[in-house]
Image 1 (cartoon, rainbow, N blue to C red):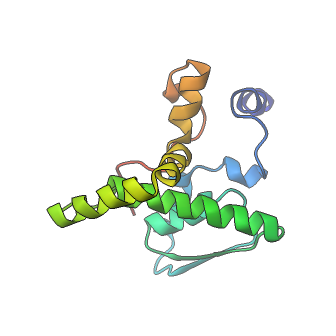
Image 2 (cartoon, rainbow, N blue to C red; image 1 turned 120 degrees about the vertical axis):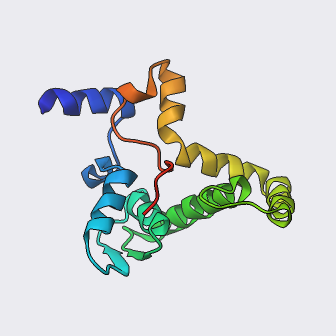
Length: 148
């Protein structure tokens, strides 16, 4: 276990909170396993992994932030992720009308879309920067093909 923690620290740094080492996929599976779950109340909002997992599962989410700066930062992270999801049509069938809207989102919110994609595909970004195989890194990207 100590070796795994040290490897994680070397590859990804020290997490904001240790519960943030849980992947979005693990959190989504946890939410799936709880019958009739409609709301998540997170006592440590961290870096938005639980918020993203809840959103992917269509579950309402409320999280407690550590202070106003943390809240503002998390709001910004989630906004950017949603710009990216809309612009890329992730998890949806895209009509021609949607493609036009997506183009407008990319045009007017390009930097936010880019930042959101960076967050949603964090594991790929680390793998590129470290020049390693993404499958060798712990955790996962926030968006995968399987939804709740």
